[in-house]
Image (cartoon, rainbow, N blue to C red):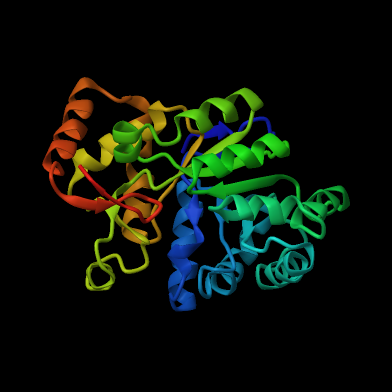
Length: 297
């Protein structure tokens, strides 16, 4: 496993992240097995959130033997200090930890999120204080709206950003281009989610009848190796620091098993041609972008 600088945080993180959703709804023994396998492969960055069902409970138990050997990141969708503090303490309890290596304002999607977070009594009155106390080491954001993410990092010197740097949305719409440039200029750590996503689920039934019901977007099928590798390489070619797989063990293990190949053999003309062909196959069809809006290709 290769380890990469996460911006200027000082953390050297594995090129693949363990997303806590992998542990969601798993029996404890399976979560333990997934985490042990990840550790054996060299994964040293684990990310979870209160909104991921029982992931904090399951992952927290699984990480007990390894806590001092890994980076643990958590998130909160709270926008006020009072609510955020309650969720923060609950996360620490469930995850059996005194501190988080990275704590992120989660799922920023509207400008009203920013106004509340930075307003009187907002969460941004709390997070710097928690960092001063040593309860969190770094402060980050996660977002699906590039506009909102840019406004957030304009107002505060966040350490990391977790954003969908997805082959389809970047090639077709340039999604993430401005954010990536600004984040790089600020020395932020850049975590890439949705890089292994083919598209958004068209219907809820399509999702829950598939092999990947825990994944919020349709992942690339593990059997489609060339497509999967091209998508991974595309995200890496943009300059992201690490990849956050979809929330199922099949996708996670695929990315872990192929990350070295992608790093050793960057995006090629053949990879680009394959992704262009995938875009052509979508022409005239209605899909959804990663913000849930209906669009045509």
